[in-house]
Length: 519
Image 1 (cartoon, rainbow, N blue to C red):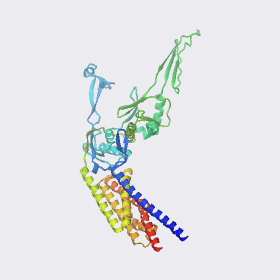
Image 2: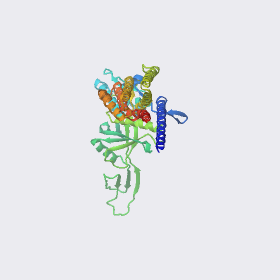
Image 3: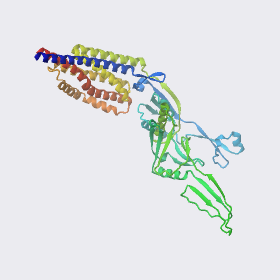
């Protein structure tokens, strides 16, 4: 009976040992796989080429370089043709000089920026409006300055696939108008807008829209416009002599009845004709026509939806529509620029740090980590080996996390990453030291709690600093704060879930050995 029990226990122990070996090998392969993914990425076929599915690391302008854009107040002029009485001639810009002379007209060149708007106050205001637009677009990593003497604005913007679209909209003044298509009377402008919201339903096949909400005064104006500029038909009935007119001002159809009230003849001659008298409005942004329309019904809620782009299922085209809509939203959500600007410089400036230098830094960090892990293996044997596997996986997961947490990596950020690697190494070393010194080394729950308590109490000031730096809008500081925040958080979560559990594999093996000796 005793022999049977021993055989069962031996079989059970052998099975557990085999399981531990398999677990160790699995952890080693997982660490290698994660490292390969972090370094080389994951590639999948897209059309005729292989595309990396792993998000690229976002580098700051001090590493990657930046697009430098210079905006200066526009020197353009508008040609205005006036008649002898000083009134502006419609379509005067299309007349030749001979036609202007023959008709007794005069031509004037009016600057788009009058002399009274070119002042320090408006230069600063223009800069602030650009900053407000960037805030609405979620752009924080940029540098901007203004020359208060001549109004020149200099911008440094990170280079990516959205930069060209962003730059092209920088010179948009943002003048919004709804005008009468016939008389060109301005019916509404920027002062009537309360809020603009992007509605992206492209994933549902409905397209991209801008929902413009008007303020109280604008809501009243828009209601009047939608009741006046409607699809309407004017019908006219004509007969003999005396006329009686009846008009319903609240209807969308006007009827005029003419009859002979003095005639004793009951018969009349009637001619009925019908013509379309629809009135339309034109919407403009910076004098560029966006759309011309009328309305089917009165709109009382003060909201208007605009479709951006055309119907399509092409993902790249839809992405372009979304970016255009975002720029329009940011433009109309803020004040109109007091000055019309034009771009005088648009070039990509390389960083002083070459790509090779950055690679040297990466290689240097990898070499230092390799030496440090070798020390762990020498000092703590199998425990050190298991901890080293866990550390490599930690480094891989950390770099992937920084990609998807949208952290911008600056030089200060790289320094922060190095500190995170050091902090994790210190924690692992403390954990291994306690395990070695503890008589009951397989009581890892107790050891882990004591190590966590001692370690994280000491780095509380560092945690507070990291969180504080995250909210500072200056990229070098926020980059350092963000990499530290995500690094410390990962140290706390990852080690208790992975590193400690890998230590248990060794602890269980040691416990099995002790039990065999006692037998």
